[in-house]
Length: 608
Ligand code: F6R
Image (cartoon, rainbow, N blue to C red; front, top):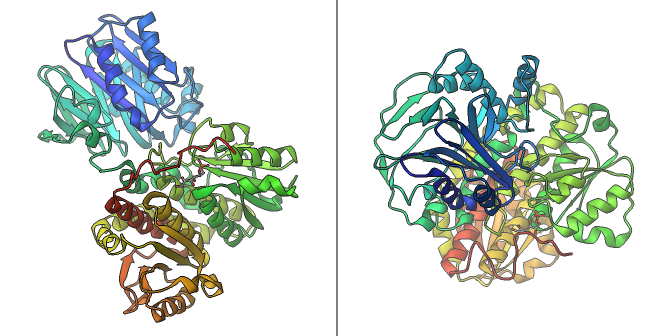
């Protein structure tokens, strides 16, 4: 997601800001900008595209000054473009922001009614207006930000500068990362440590609900509620490479650990707990459209196809609408019957996959309504669709998709409950109960991630296997397929995923003592049948690795159990996917493969 840098010191800051943003490039971005105080004015420069474009703009129009903020933007609200790039300015205030302001629609309406003009489509510009209004009421910059924070809800890391305060930056954090760097007569702030390392290794990580003020000589730290915070700086000993990965060995591992946050961000601002419903947002599906959808066709490739397969269960089970999941790469080759009345959901992490794009275009030409479930704003599939349901997983750098997969599962859950509420298949009461549990899932994901060490030990016991089988039924069948894909793509161990009921129809022939068989055994209606599969594997000496939410489920039959907390059966895949991702990761790492860049694979497949 976006990158923030701030500098208050004695040197020309534009090159320092640019360099800091370069260190944050790994986070992904589509535009960038800086605001520098030149002693009299705030000078703002922004550019769409890569940092070289911002560098060129700075070369054409140099800005001089020793206090500044900079930003790389990963679009969430409003297309990637220069006018949506940060900093956003209102009066004498410049703001950069990472995160999502949940109540931006109502705040924008109110501010517009008060005569405020908006120059961008972003949620961030609201913050600039709120801080500007507060300074006009006579508050100093720190108090003005505090007053703005009391009005906004959501996730944010914010850095603010004022024209009337040439050597001060104020900061706030809630649910998005922000760290202050303490140098000698120099203070910095950044989204992540790599941007600070060439200036200092002494840092203070801000916590949620905290604000800070940095000047050349001082850091002031407080909670938004006014409580003072005293926190000693910590010394960073990571190398630059480690720092970019947040201390994790690989991006994939970092991204696996980012899943609770990715899920929270995907749900943020969309869940209406009181009514058991979701906001339509930019889906472009009104109440009448939801009622009249005759069929949903989910189109996707690879991991996204596995999310689509799960989406089919959700849409039929929760929304009671006929649904099919299709490999986008096959869709066009069979002259599909598709047209008005069909809702085609194109599921794609990148939003650029050539097969998914081409299949969705074909369906659109034949009269179907297209909804894009994508992670990248303004991507080709998002542009051609009638509506969008963005997953807010943030950029995924590891080639093997992890956090985007679970975010896709969450998005398809939202779509299913949304349609179900309008079609009368999900009552208000059921919706309220489902959503109350769904918002609890991120913390349950954290519990699963805390078992990573145990999963590594299990991975050690199967790291030399030549083949592996993954079995799951019903709501776990797509998870089994995805588990097998993950293992094969990063560890090069041959793996097959099967619906449990299919085992006897062929794959059972492969099972012997050298074959690890990963069985998904959550306590749902398929448990007993899956337990029979386990017995069959054990009878052939197969090595069972059981993923359970109840220790009794696998009892003495499994060689290893991987435990997840219980949740509603519709949400179990959000949890059971994680041990499988970690298992694949550790097997691959132990075998010494290039985890983040597996051989022969590309992150975005733009050829058919
Ligand atoms: C595997 C993986 C791929 C992608 C597939 C589609 O880990 O990431 O299978 O899922 O190439 O890509 P998107 O989702 O970008 O359409």
